[in-house]
Every structure is written in structure tokens, then in C-alpha cells.
Image (cartoon, one colour):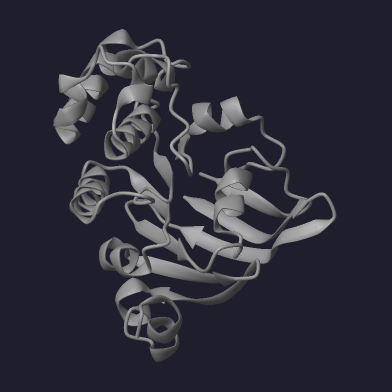
Length: 234
């Protein structure tokens, strides 16, 4: 579904991602793990068209993504739930969900997707008329994911969905990620909580200082002594 081939991404003259290659197949949950500054979020921003790729190629469903405007990336089937949630705080929950479907014209399908999202996140149904900025952090995270799902993506990019959440809400978010995949959406997950990410993922890529360090089946990496020591508190 998605292939990155030796991509290089810069902030000014600073290389943030250095020759990264990865592949995501349909129906997978793939996770990127690594310490702060490893290039995980930068990778998602490059895929979304928010940052330019200086060298290397990105393809999605056989079509090149390099240089594609961010709104066109969404139209092609990739949605991004960003780090920090980035919901519209002065708009209601309902209006935020509408924004996720801004490129769509299929009203009946939009209504069906809204209902699916409200079933995934029952708390949002209770708060449809509430200003999004007045909700708890966990509720805002649910809204950020739900808004991205309103685009009906084939590939969902999730950036740090558990950041700042209480443990009970972290469990809810990861259970929901599994349900999203079960409903047919492929997921590329960036997550500081490496243990939780490896528990739900099929495969994982470990980034260090912008470069790929390790990759393989998530269950095998979860038992790798080097990974356990560096990221799992072993």
C-alpha cells in the first residue's frame, strides 16, 4: 500500500530523516518507535505532504506521493491524526467531525461513517454540541482520530495517540486502533509507548537519529534484548 524508498527530509539544513525505507501492506498495523527526535513524526508529516522530501521516493497504491499537496494526499486515501491532536477548539465536536469530511460529497456515506465513529467513541456522541476545546485530553484524542476517520482513509496515520492520557484511556485508544484495523483501515502508528504499540502492531520499524535501526515482526522486536533495554524498561 505504502512504500518509502530512501527518503531524506530536512528542517532547513538539518537532516531529520536520513535514507528511510519502509513498507506498509494493506490490513496491517505498522508502528514506528524510537526516542524523541528519531524522525517518527517527521516521517508522517512527509507522507501527508506537510513536509517536502528532498531525496528518495514515496508511493501510495502505486502512485508517487512526492510533491503532492496535502489536500490531495487526503483525497487519495491517507488521513493524519497529528501529534498534539490539533482539534479546532472553538468548534463543536460535530463541526470538527464535519471538517474531517470536507473533501467528500457522498452524504449518505458520510452519515454512515459518522455513526460508525460515534459507535467507536460513545463519549463523542454525548458531546456533539460541546466546544471541542472544553473536553478532556482523552476526549480530544478520540475526536482527533474520529475526525481523521471521517475522510474514510485507506491508510490512517496516528501520531502519539496516547500522549498525556491516563492509563485507562490509553487502553481504550489502543483497543480502538485494533477495531479500526478490523473494519478495514490500514494503520501506520507513531507511539512513544513502545510496549503498547508493539502489542497491537503486526510489524515495527525502530528509528534512531533519523535512520532505520531495526525492523521486523512486532512480537519478535518486543523480545529483542536491545529493544527491551532501550524502549521497554528492561
